[in-house]
Image (cartoon, rainbow, N blue to C red; front, side):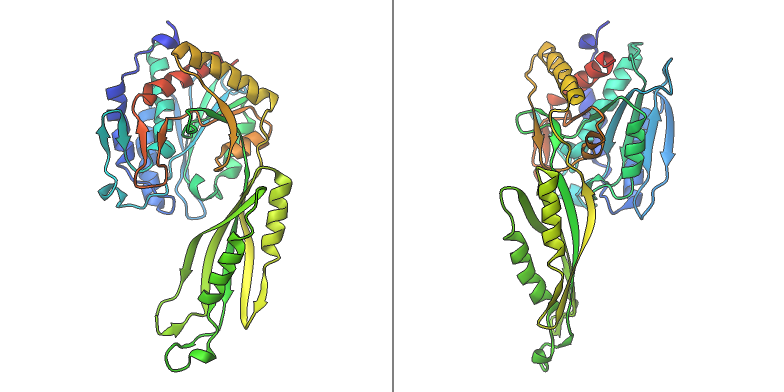
Length: 376
């Protein structure tokens, strides 16, 4: 029997995916992420040795499953994915799981529970068919990718180092293509410290941390150029409207195609620290994803294999380097052959219109099954 003949059933996959989507798992809710890991552990329990790795730094735990294999312990294939989403608990009220023709909606369905589920279903169908992969397979699901993977980067890198290949079922690119390189990303924590006063009776005595932060945000975003981008996505400040705020915190993100451009961007950001009109502005560097340089020989060989499999399945698979970091940044930067974004097709990730194309579920599951059977 060939992987081409595996009986992937679209309706059954949608039904199996639904509990995953209806188990909301925002990154900062460790208990919610752990509930999602419970569901994934249950679905993987019959396939191999399930290990729950406790979380740290306030995040949820991870799930690692090693499938049985005659060459267990030797370098093989790592399937790496994250189970956290950007959607807070309660998003299901605005974005309920629903299927409308070939589209299926829900928080985290595209990024990246749909792709993770395809990988699990590929492993289940291979096991049911009694098909042994040439190489040992390990699955690692982690809880904190959406905030830069601060608590599990070391775990991912250590697991990747034990393997010859890494598959990352992040959502496919807009044209359905895979990712063979990713831009560098740096995060920054910013704080302004001013002087409080009564906004009505003593306005002139205060120094507004909010006003200074607002001006700094405009300056930072104006630094965006063709080689390096800057954006501010989080602001926290103020408790009383009749008080001049003495503290404001914000978070910024910078992205560049080349590491040297990101390094220059980091230097520009850190140089902004200082004092202005009695308000101190502090910039500290947060988590960073390194550049994963495209066109590495091992990765390109994986892509050529994936493209051949896709042609057998009746579709064309393209590849490109991409922005929007993933844990593939880490494994690719280590020089380990990595094929990213082989997950589901869809649109609207990180929005209240997040959805997938239903027919991409069996398509991507079969693609992953093919890679598992042909990577040697």
